[in-house]
Image (cartoon, rainbow, N blue to C red):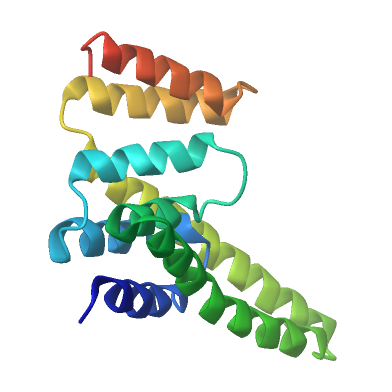
Length: 173
């Protein structure tokens, strides 16, 4: 099977599970792209994720960069379409269903459950990815410090990315 067809089919299947966005899929995306298909190594995956987080726009840029790495511009286009089309169709119909619910309590319950599921998936994904890419006590400390800064201050996350980059360049992590 060609790399483009494999990329399209596997990312389309992931899209059906992308409840909570691309960040909720990161562990599975890591497993696919690094361990199963060997499209990337761990460092490249982490770099692509960092670029996607620092860039403006949607988080699907991680997937676009993986597609670009696999097959250039065509791979980037195929990956972007593959990760978007199934979940977009499902959300279209799900939103129609939710809007047609007559009981406001049922409607609120469904919306609350969906929100809780998305948050839980993203937090679980963040934990899993931090376990995979942090290889030293300094890296774990930086992750913990970043979480504390985000939760307890109003600092913009780009400051944390710059600090992490500087610590990496200086060889601390």
